[in-house]
Length: 318
View 1 (cartoon, one colour):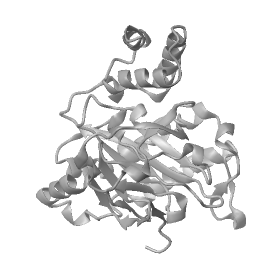
View 2 (cartoon, one colour):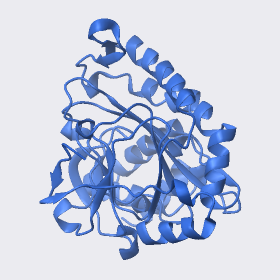
View 3 (cartoon, helix red, strand yellow):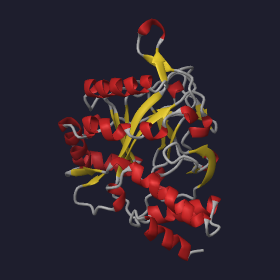
């Protein structure tokens, strides 16, 4: 793969493609256990994905985040920084458009083949539109494991879908192959900030502390990457001049698995809940890293999304 950047002196390898295993459950399971991920080329309807992407791009044009590209072919980043976005509006897009991608017969059949049984997609809080801006290191997702935020269950998997072509320079998702085999790593606050929960520093693991092989791909609409809740992964920096990397990630679990409040809660509710708890805990002098430790612990252990429930639990620890 030409132009593939290096991390810590190690070149990125190509993701293993598992299309041939879809009809062979035993081979699919063996690949899952070995690598911690399954990657598929052109397994979903690229036309459906491109249709939804165009709707999202039209919304971003209205917001001034994108402008018509030179020559009239497609759209490009306007140069508007993340801080200039209508944040609530941006995070309402998944609720409006993702059912057209995630609840189609094609996607459902694919996920049931991957899981080997009927599946359940988490609610709006489990689906995120990623709009990775060029040269925006403060919002790059550092290497992390999803389960650091959701510790009460390991039965979910993450589904990642590119909504447009993602060349190496646009910040394609990378995974540390087989890193799930070593369990949950220690995560520390990084310099990057979350744009899902504004103001929160992202948790992560330093690249130098990850010995496993990094793998990635030049993604196309229709491709799908499914990975373990304990697989280390990160969204690499977008070094293009004006391309916004658009992708979707969602949490999926077997239909037979127990539900938690996180599977049912909207992102708007989560954000309001976080703000309420932050105000309550600030009155007790709990701020900064201590607040983040308590609120993440409450969420990750599956406490009910109720401001009093989690705030009271947190306050009992002070």
